[in-house]
Amino acid sequence: MPIKAFNIIMIKKIFSLMMFFIVLSLAAQKETKTRILIIFDASGSMTAPFENNTRMVMAKKLANKLVDSLSSFKNVELALRVYGHQQTANLKDCKDSKLEVPFSSGNTVILKKRINSLVPKGWTPIAYSLQESEKDFPEEKGVRNLIIIVTDGLEECSGDPCAISQALQKKGIVLKPFIIGLGSDEQFKLFFNCAGTYYDANSENEVNTVVGVVVSQAMNATSCQVNLLDKQLRPLETNVLMSIYDASTQKLLHNYEHTMNGRGVPDTLFLDPLRKYNFVIHTMPPIFKKNVELVPGRHNTIAIDASQGHINFVCNGKTNYSELKTIVRQRNQNKTINAQLFNTSKRYLTGAYDLEILTIPRIYLDSVIVSENKTTLIEIPQPGRLQINKSRDLVVAIYQYKNGKVEWVTDITDAAYQIIIMQPGKYFMMGRSKSETRTIYSFEKEFIITSATTTEINI
Image (cartoon, helix red, strand yellow):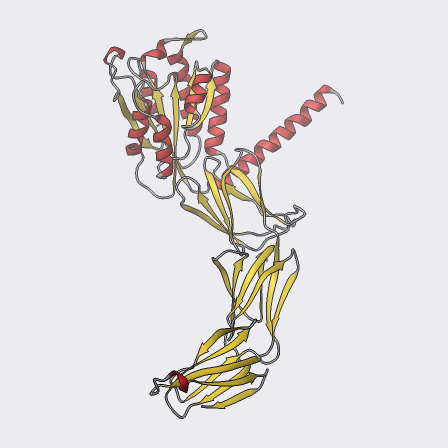
Protein backbone atom coordinates (compact mmCIF):
# COMPACT_ATOMS: atom_id res chain seq x y z
CA MET A 1 0.00 0.00 0.00
CA PRO A 2 1.40 3.48 -0.84
CA ILE A 3 2.57 5.46 2.18
CA LYS A 4 0.18 8.33 1.42
CA ALA A 5 -2.84 6.03 1.28
CA PHE A 6 -1.74 4.31 4.49
CA ASN A 7 -1.43 7.67 6.25
CA ILE A 8 -4.90 8.70 5.13
CA ILE A 9 -6.36 5.47 6.51
CA MET A 10 -4.53 5.92 9.82
CA ILE A 11 -5.73 9.54 10.09
CA LYS A 12 -9.32 8.41 9.51
CA LYS A 13 -8.98 5.72 12.19
CA ILE A 14 -7.50 8.18 14.67
CA PHE A 15 -10.24 10.70 13.90
CA SER A 16 -12.93 8.04 14.37
CA LEU A 17 -11.39 7.03 17.70
CA MET A 18 -11.28 10.67 18.83
CA MET A 19 -14.92 11.16 17.88
CA PHE A 20 -15.83 8.00 19.77
CA PHE A 21 -14.28 9.29 22.98
CA ILE A 22 -15.84 12.74 22.47
CA VAL A 23 -19.25 11.09 22.21
CA LEU A 24 -18.50 9.06 25.34
CA SER A 25 -17.42 12.21 27.12
CA LEU A 26 -20.60 14.07 26.25
CA ALA A 27 -22.74 11.10 27.26
CA ALA A 28 -21.10 10.75 30.63
CA GLN A 29 -20.76 14.40 31.56
CA LYS A 30 -24.38 15.37 31.05
CA GLU A 31 -24.89 18.30 33.41
CA THR A 32 -22.49 17.26 36.17
CA LYS A 33 -20.42 20.17 37.44
CA THR A 34 -16.68 19.65 37.88
CA ARG A 35 -14.55 21.80 40.19
CA ILE A 36 -10.77 21.59 39.74
CA LEU A 37 -8.33 23.15 42.21
CA ILE A 38 -4.79 23.68 40.91
CA ILE A 39 -2.30 23.59 43.81
CA PHE A 40 0.82 25.35 42.53
CA ASP A 41 4.33 25.08 43.97
CA ALA A 42 6.04 28.48 44.22
CA SER A 43 8.74 27.39 46.69
CA GLY A 44 12.37 28.46 46.39
CA SER A 45 13.46 25.27 44.63
CA MET A 46 11.47 26.30 41.56
CA THR A 47 14.37 28.58 40.61
CA ALA A 48 16.40 25.48 39.65
CA PRO A 49 17.29 25.01 35.94
CA PHE A 50 14.91 23.14 33.66
CA GLU A 51 16.20 22.61 30.12
CA ASN A 52 16.88 26.17 28.86
CA ASN A 53 14.81 27.90 31.55
CA THR A 54 13.86 27.35 35.17
CA ARG A 55 11.37 25.00 36.73
CA MET A 56 9.17 27.99 37.53
CA VAL A 57 8.98 29.03 33.87
CA MET A 58 8.04 25.49 32.87
CA ALA A 59 5.54 25.16 35.72
CA LYS A 60 3.80 28.35 34.60
CA LYS A 61 3.62 27.06 31.02
CA LEU A 62 2.17 23.80 32.31
CA ALA A 63 -0.40 25.54 34.53
CA ASN A 64 -1.45 27.88 31.71
CA LYS A 65 -1.98 24.91 29.40
CA LEU A 66 -4.08 23.23 32.09
CA VAL A 67 -6.22 26.35 32.54
CA ASP A 68 -6.76 26.76 28.78
CA SER A 69 -7.62 23.11 28.24
CA LEU A 70 -9.89 22.66 31.28
CA SER A 71 -11.78 25.90 30.78
CA SER A 72 -12.84 24.71 27.29
CA PHE A 73 -15.18 22.15 28.89
CA LYS A 74 -18.72 22.98 29.93
CA ASN A 75 -19.78 22.98 33.59
CA VAL A 76 -16.21 23.42 34.86
CA GLU A 77 -15.09 25.78 37.60
CA LEU A 78 -11.39 26.36 38.32
CA ALA A 79 -9.51 27.70 41.34
CA LEU A 80 -5.86 28.29 42.29
CA ARG A 81 -4.08 27.65 45.60
CA VAL A 82 -0.38 28.52 45.84
CA TYR A 83 2.21 27.58 48.46
CA GLY A 84 5.76 28.79 49.19
CA HIS A 85 5.19 32.25 47.64
CA GLN A 86 4.68 34.53 50.64
CA GLN A 87 7.69 33.90 52.91
CA THR A 88 11.38 33.33 52.16
CA ALA A 89 12.86 29.84 52.55
CA ASN A 90 14.97 30.73 55.59
CA LEU A 91 11.75 31.27 57.61
CA LYS A 92 10.66 27.66 56.94
CA ASP A 93 6.98 28.68 57.06
CA CYS A 94 4.91 25.48 57.02
CA LYS A 95 1.67 27.42 56.66
CA ASP A 96 2.68 29.44 53.62
CA SER A 97 -0.34 28.44 51.53
CA LYS A 98 -3.17 30.59 50.20
CA LEU A 99 -6.22 30.30 47.97
CA GLU A 100 -5.31 32.97 45.41
CA VAL A 101 -8.26 32.55 43.02
CA PRO A 102 -11.53 31.06 44.31
CA PHE A 103 -13.77 28.78 42.25
CA SER A 104 -15.60 30.35 39.36
CA SER A 105 -16.38 29.74 35.72
CA GLY A 106 -14.94 32.06 33.09
CA ASN A 107 -11.98 33.10 35.26
CA THR A 108 -9.26 32.02 32.80
CA VAL A 109 -7.72 35.47 32.47
CA ILE A 110 -7.56 36.00 36.24
CA LEU A 111 -6.02 32.58 36.82
CA LYS A 112 -3.31 33.00 34.19
CA LYS A 113 -2.48 36.51 35.34
CA ARG A 114 -2.00 35.33 38.93
CA ILE A 115 0.05 32.28 37.86
CA ASN A 116 2.34 34.40 35.68
CA SER A 117 2.93 36.90 38.50
CA LEU A 118 4.22 34.33 41.00
CA VAL A 119 7.81 34.52 42.25
CA PRO A 120 9.35 31.46 43.95
CA LYS A 121 10.42 32.11 47.55
CA GLY A 122 9.77 29.72 50.36
CA TRP A 123 9.09 26.31 51.84
CA THR A 124 7.08 23.27 50.57
CA PRO A 125 4.01 22.59 52.80
CA ILE A 126 2.20 20.13 50.51
CA ALA A 127 0.27 18.33 53.27
CA TYR A 128 -0.91 21.59 54.81
CA SER A 129 -2.04 22.86 51.39
CA LEU A 130 -4.03 19.67 50.81
CA GLN A 131 -5.58 19.98 54.25
CA GLU A 132 -6.55 23.62 53.65
CA SER A 133 -7.98 22.76 50.23
CA GLU A 134 -10.99 21.17 51.94
CA LYS A 135 -12.17 24.72 52.74
CA ASP A 136 -11.69 25.82 49.13
CA PHE A 137 -14.47 23.62 47.71
CA PRO A 138 -18.00 24.99 48.20
CA GLU A 139 -20.42 22.51 49.77
CA GLU A 140 -22.66 21.27 46.98
CA LYS A 141 -24.00 17.80 46.27
CA GLY A 142 -23.50 16.07 42.94
CA VAL A 143 -20.26 17.92 42.04
CA ARG A 144 -16.97 16.29 41.01
CA ASN A 145 -14.15 17.87 43.02
CA LEU A 146 -10.61 17.37 41.68
CA ILE A 147 -7.13 18.53 42.67
CA ILE A 148 -4.12 18.89 40.37
CA ILE A 149 -0.81 19.49 42.16
CA VAL A 150 2.10 20.99 40.21
CA THR A 151 5.32 20.64 42.21
CA ASP A 152 9.07 20.09 41.96
CA GLY A 153 9.74 19.00 45.52
CA LEU A 154 8.84 16.66 48.34
CA GLU A 155 7.15 17.59 51.60
CA GLU A 156 9.41 19.81 53.70
CA CYS A 157 7.13 20.04 56.73
CA SER A 158 5.86 17.43 59.18
CA GLY A 159 2.61 16.61 57.38
CA ASP A 160 1.73 13.41 55.51
CA PRO A 161 0.28 14.22 52.05
CA CYS A 162 -0.79 10.58 51.54
CA ALA A 163 -2.81 10.42 54.76
CA ILE A 164 -4.50 13.77 54.10
CA SER A 165 -5.27 12.91 50.48
CA GLN A 166 -6.81 9.59 51.49
CA ALA A 167 -8.82 11.28 54.24
CA LEU A 168 -10.20 13.82 51.75
CA GLN A 169 -11.17 11.00 49.40
CA LYS A 170 -12.77 8.95 52.17
CA LYS A 171 -14.83 11.93 53.29
CA GLY A 172 -15.98 12.42 49.70
CA ILE A 173 -14.43 15.91 49.48
CA VAL A 174 -12.33 15.15 46.39
CA LEU A 175 -11.61 12.37 43.95
CA LYS A 176 -8.11 10.92 43.65
CA PRO A 177 -5.74 13.86 42.98
CA PHE A 178 -3.32 14.24 40.07
CA ILE A 179 0.29 15.10 40.92
CA ILE A 180 2.61 16.45 38.20
CA GLY A 181 6.30 16.38 39.17
CA LEU A 182 8.86 18.68 37.51
CA GLY A 183 12.51 17.61 37.61
CA SER A 184 11.49 14.52 39.58
CA ASP A 185 13.13 11.15 40.21
CA GLU A 186 12.13 7.69 41.50
CA GLN A 187 11.80 9.06 45.03
CA PHE A 188 9.00 11.32 43.80
CA LYS A 189 7.01 8.36 42.52
CA LEU A 190 7.40 6.45 45.76
CA PHE A 191 6.39 9.48 47.78
CA PHE A 192 3.39 10.62 45.75
CA ASN A 193 1.88 7.39 44.39
CA CYS A 194 -0.14 6.91 47.58
CA ALA A 195 -1.43 10.50 47.47
CA GLY A 196 -2.78 10.39 43.93
CA THR A 197 -2.04 9.56 40.30
CA TYR A 198 1.53 10.67 39.67
CA TYR A 199 3.06 11.89 36.38
CA ASP A 200 6.65 12.87 35.53
CA ALA A 201 7.24 16.01 33.46
CA ASN A 202 11.00 16.16 33.04
CA SER A 203 11.11 17.86 29.64
CA GLU A 204 8.99 20.32 27.70
CA ASN A 205 7.74 17.52 25.46
CA GLU A 206 6.71 15.54 28.54
CA VAL A 207 4.91 18.60 29.90
CA ASN A 208 2.72 18.78 26.81
CA THR A 209 2.02 15.05 26.96
CA VAL A 210 1.22 15.06 30.67
CA VAL A 211 -1.18 17.99 30.33
CA GLY A 212 -3.07 16.12 27.61
CA VAL A 213 -3.24 12.93 29.66
CA VAL A 214 -4.37 14.68 32.85
CA VAL A 215 -7.05 16.71 31.08
CA SER A 216 -8.29 13.62 29.26
CA GLN A 217 -8.50 11.58 32.47
CA ALA A 218 -10.08 14.42 34.42
CA MET A 219 -12.75 15.26 31.88
CA ASN A 220 -13.36 12.50 29.37
CA ALA A 221 -15.81 9.68 29.88
CA THR A 222 -14.84 6.08 30.49
CA SER A 223 -17.18 3.34 29.41
CA CYS A 224 -17.53 -0.14 30.85
CA GLN A 225 -19.69 -3.22 30.81
CA VAL A 226 -20.36 -5.71 33.58
CA ASN A 227 -20.11 -9.31 32.39
CA LEU A 228 -22.02 -11.71 34.64
CA LEU A 229 -20.36 -14.99 33.75
CA ASP A 230 -21.72 -18.53 33.70
CA LYS A 231 -19.57 -21.61 34.38
CA GLN A 232 -18.21 -21.51 30.82
CA LEU A 233 -17.16 -17.84 31.37
CA ARG A 234 -19.83 -16.61 28.96
CA PRO A 235 -21.51 -13.26 29.84
CA LEU A 236 -25.03 -14.70 29.68
CA GLU A 237 -26.42 -13.94 33.17
CA THR A 238 -28.56 -10.79 33.34
CA ASN A 239 -31.77 -9.20 34.68
CA VAL A 240 -30.47 -8.47 38.16
CA LEU A 241 -30.02 -5.24 40.12
CA MET A 242 -26.49 -3.83 40.45
CA SER A 243 -25.58 -1.31 43.15
CA ILE A 244 -22.39 0.68 42.61
CA TYR A 245 -20.65 2.35 45.57
CA ASP A 246 -17.67 4.68 45.90
CA ALA A 247 -14.99 2.41 47.40
CA SER A 248 -13.52 5.24 49.49
CA THR A 249 -16.66 6.83 50.94
CA GLN A 250 -18.97 3.74 50.73
CA LYS A 251 -21.56 6.13 49.27
CA LEU A 252 -24.12 4.64 46.89
CA LEU A 253 -23.60 6.17 43.44
CA HIS A 254 -25.85 4.19 41.07
CA ASN A 255 -28.49 1.49 40.93
CA TYR A 256 -28.81 -0.20 37.55
CA GLU A 257 -30.79 -3.18 36.34
CA HIS A 258 -28.31 -5.35 34.44
CA THR A 259 -29.53 -5.74 30.89
CA MET A 260 -28.40 -6.97 27.49
CA ASN A 261 -28.38 -4.47 24.64
CA GLY A 262 -29.77 -5.00 21.16
CA ARG A 263 -26.68 -6.98 20.14
CA GLY A 264 -27.12 -9.44 22.99
CA VAL A 265 -24.15 -8.19 25.04
CA PRO A 266 -24.18 -6.45 28.45
CA ASP A 267 -25.19 -2.82 28.06
CA THR A 268 -22.63 -0.01 28.34
CA LEU A 269 -22.26 2.12 31.49
CA PHE A 270 -20.38 5.40 31.84
CA LEU A 271 -18.45 5.81 35.10
CA ASP A 272 -15.97 8.34 36.45
CA PRO A 273 -12.48 6.82 36.00
CA LEU A 274 -11.09 8.74 38.98
CA ARG A 275 -12.96 6.62 41.51
CA LYS A 276 -12.58 3.08 42.74
CA TYR A 277 -15.86 1.18 42.90
CA ASN A 278 -17.50 -1.52 44.95
CA PHE A 279 -20.10 -3.52 43.03
CA VAL A 280 -22.94 -5.41 44.68
CA ILE A 281 -24.83 -7.77 42.35
CA HIS A 282 -28.18 -8.56 43.99
CA THR A 283 -28.31 -12.24 43.19
CA MET A 284 -29.35 -14.81 45.81
CA PRO A 285 -27.02 -14.57 47.72
CA PRO A 286 -25.48 -11.24 46.64
CA ILE A 287 -22.06 -11.03 44.97
CA PHE A 288 -19.51 -8.42 46.09
CA LYS A 289 -16.64 -7.15 43.92
CA LYS A 290 -14.52 -4.51 45.63
CA ASN A 291 -11.99 -1.85 44.61
CA VAL A 292 -12.73 -1.97 40.88
CA GLU A 293 -10.50 0.44 38.96
CA LEU A 294 -11.20 1.63 35.42
CA VAL A 295 -8.59 2.39 32.79
CA PRO A 296 -9.42 5.93 31.62
CA GLY A 297 -10.18 6.59 27.98
CA ARG A 298 -10.98 3.00 27.02
CA HIS A 299 -13.85 0.54 27.23
CA ASN A 300 -13.47 -1.56 30.40
CA THR A 301 -14.88 -5.03 30.98
CA ILE A 302 -15.72 -5.99 34.56
CA ALA A 303 -16.06 -9.76 34.83
CA ILE A 304 -18.01 -11.28 37.74
CA ASP A 305 -18.79 -14.99 38.24
CA ALA A 306 -22.57 -15.26 38.57
CA SER A 307 -23.64 -18.74 37.47
CA GLN A 308 -27.27 -19.37 38.53
CA GLY A 309 -30.00 -21.97 38.61
CA HIS A 310 -33.51 -22.15 40.10
CA ILE A 311 -35.23 -23.69 43.11
CA ASN A 312 -38.93 -24.45 42.70
CA PHE A 313 -40.98 -25.38 45.77
CA VAL A 314 -44.16 -27.37 45.10
CA CYS A 315 -46.82 -28.74 47.43
CA ASN A 316 -48.77 -31.57 45.75
CA GLY A 317 -52.54 -31.47 45.45
CA LYS A 318 -54.87 -28.78 46.75
CA THR A 319 -53.05 -27.33 49.72
CA ASN A 320 -54.55 -25.77 52.82
CA TYR A 321 -51.33 -23.96 53.65
CA SER A 322 -51.57 -20.18 53.68
CA GLU A 323 -48.37 -18.65 52.24
CA LEU A 324 -46.13 -21.54 53.17
CA LYS A 325 -42.46 -20.46 53.08
CA THR A 326 -39.03 -22.05 53.06
CA ILE A 327 -36.00 -20.53 54.76
CA VAL A 328 -33.03 -20.77 52.37
CA ARG A 329 -29.45 -20.61 53.67
CA GLN A 330 -26.10 -21.33 52.09
CA ARG A 331 -24.66 -24.64 53.21
CA ASN A 332 -23.41 -24.53 56.83
CA GLN A 333 -24.16 -20.80 57.21
CA ASN A 334 -26.65 -19.29 59.63
CA LYS A 335 -27.61 -16.21 57.65
CA THR A 336 -30.98 -16.43 55.89
CA ILE A 337 -30.78 -15.66 52.17
CA ASN A 338 -34.48 -15.82 51.39
CA ALA A 339 -37.87 -16.89 52.70
CA GLN A 340 -39.35 -18.28 49.49
CA LEU A 341 -43.06 -18.92 49.03
CA PHE A 342 -44.21 -22.34 47.90
CA ASN A 343 -45.34 -22.81 44.32
CA THR A 344 -42.83 -20.18 43.16
CA SER A 345 -39.47 -20.46 41.37
CA LYS A 346 -36.47 -18.31 42.30
CA ARG A 347 -32.91 -17.94 40.95
CA TYR A 348 -29.92 -18.73 43.20
CA LEU A 349 -26.18 -18.85 42.63
CA THR A 350 -25.02 -22.36 41.85
CA GLY A 351 -23.93 -24.27 44.94
CA ALA A 352 -25.26 -26.11 48.01
CA TYR A 353 -28.08 -24.83 50.24
CA ASP A 354 -29.74 -25.85 53.50
CA LEU A 355 -33.55 -25.59 53.50
CA GLU A 356 -35.99 -25.24 56.39
CA ILE A 357 -39.60 -25.68 55.23
CA LEU A 358 -41.98 -24.01 57.68
CA THR A 359 -44.54 -26.79 57.77
CA ILE A 360 -45.86 -28.47 60.94
CA PRO A 361 -43.62 -30.23 61.71
CA ARG A 362 -40.77 -28.42 59.98
CA ILE A 363 -38.92 -30.20 57.18
CA TYR A 364 -35.12 -29.84 56.99
CA LEU A 365 -33.22 -30.58 53.79
CA ASP A 366 -29.42 -30.21 53.80
CA SER A 367 -26.97 -29.75 50.92
CA VAL A 368 -29.58 -29.20 48.21
CA ILE A 369 -27.65 -28.58 44.99
CA VAL A 370 -28.48 -25.77 42.55
CA SER A 371 -26.97 -26.39 39.10
CA GLU A 372 -26.43 -23.92 36.29
CA ASN A 373 -29.47 -23.29 34.08
CA LYS A 374 -31.41 -26.06 35.82
CA THR A 375 -34.36 -26.08 38.20
CA THR A 376 -34.08 -27.99 41.46
CA LEU A 377 -37.58 -29.21 42.30
CA ILE A 378 -38.53 -29.58 45.97
CA GLU A 379 -41.86 -31.37 46.47
CA ILE A 380 -43.72 -32.05 49.70
CA PRO A 381 -46.96 -34.03 50.15
CA GLN A 382 -50.33 -32.34 50.52
CA PRO A 383 -51.07 -31.70 54.22
CA GLY A 384 -53.94 -32.99 56.27
CA ARG A 385 -56.06 -31.35 58.97
CA LEU A 386 -56.12 -32.05 62.67
CA GLN A 387 -59.36 -31.01 64.41
CA ILE A 388 -59.13 -30.85 68.19
CA ASN A 389 -62.21 -30.67 70.43
CA LYS A 390 -61.47 -30.07 74.12
CA SER A 391 -64.01 -30.61 76.91
CA ARG A 392 -61.73 -29.42 79.72
CA ASP A 393 -58.70 -27.19 80.41
CA LEU A 394 -55.52 -29.04 79.45
CA VAL A 395 -51.79 -28.51 79.18
CA VAL A 396 -51.02 -30.48 76.03
CA ALA A 397 -48.64 -30.56 73.05
CA ILE A 398 -48.01 -32.70 69.96
CA TYR A 399 -44.85 -34.81 69.53
CA GLN A 400 -43.49 -37.45 67.20
CA TYR A 401 -40.82 -40.14 67.28
CA LYS A 402 -37.79 -39.61 65.01
CA ASN A 403 -34.88 -42.03 64.99
CA GLY A 404 -35.96 -43.41 68.34
CA LYS A 405 -36.18 -39.98 69.97
CA VAL A 406 -39.12 -37.76 70.95
CA GLU A 407 -39.32 -34.40 69.15
CA TRP A 408 -41.72 -31.56 69.89
CA VAL A 409 -44.00 -30.59 67.00
CA THR A 410 -46.37 -27.88 68.25
CA ASP A 411 -48.37 -26.75 71.27
CA ILE A 412 -52.17 -26.92 71.52
CA THR A 413 -53.86 -23.66 72.49
CA ASP A 414 -56.39 -23.10 75.30
CA ALA A 415 -59.24 -22.83 72.80
CA ALA A 416 -62.00 -25.46 73.01
CA TYR A 417 -61.83 -25.93 69.22
CA GLN A 418 -58.68 -25.82 67.07
CA ILE A 419 -57.65 -26.69 63.48
CA ILE A 420 -53.96 -27.45 62.73
CA ILE A 421 -52.63 -27.96 59.18
CA MET A 422 -50.01 -30.73 59.39
CA GLN A 423 -47.81 -32.90 57.22
CA PRO A 424 -48.84 -36.58 56.87
CA GLY A 425 -47.35 -38.85 59.52
CA LYS A 426 -47.76 -40.57 62.87
CA TYR A 427 -47.92 -38.36 65.99
CA PHE A 428 -48.98 -38.43 69.62
CA MET A 429 -50.38 -35.95 72.12
CA MET A 430 -49.00 -35.71 75.62
CA GLY A 431 -50.58 -33.66 78.40
CA ARG A 432 -52.54 -33.40 81.61
CA SER A 433 -55.45 -31.55 83.11
CA LYS A 434 -54.52 -28.05 84.31
CA SER A 435 -56.07 -28.83 87.67
CA GLU A 436 -54.05 -32.02 88.10
CA THR A 437 -50.61 -31.73 89.76
CA ARG A 438 -49.66 -35.41 89.84
CA THR A 439 -47.38 -36.76 87.09
CA ILE A 440 -49.06 -40.19 87.03
CA TYR A 441 -52.20 -38.61 85.55
CA SER A 442 -50.41 -37.54 82.34
CA PHE A 443 -52.09 -38.94 79.24
CA GLU A 444 -50.80 -39.90 75.79
CA LYS A 445 -52.92 -40.20 72.62
CA GLU A 446 -51.59 -41.39 69.24
CA PHE A 447 -53.03 -40.31 65.89
CA ILE A 448 -52.21 -40.36 62.18
CA ILE A 449 -52.46 -37.44 59.70
CA THR A 450 -53.25 -38.33 56.08
CA SER A 451 -53.04 -36.01 53.05
CA ALA A 452 -56.30 -34.20 52.18
CA THR A 453 -58.06 -35.78 55.19
CA THR A 454 -59.37 -34.35 58.47
CA THR A 455 -58.44 -36.25 61.62
CA GLU A 456 -60.75 -35.41 64.56
CA ILE A 457 -59.67 -35.92 68.18
CA ASN A 458 -61.76 -35.34 71.29
CA ILE A 459 -59.87 -34.78 74.52
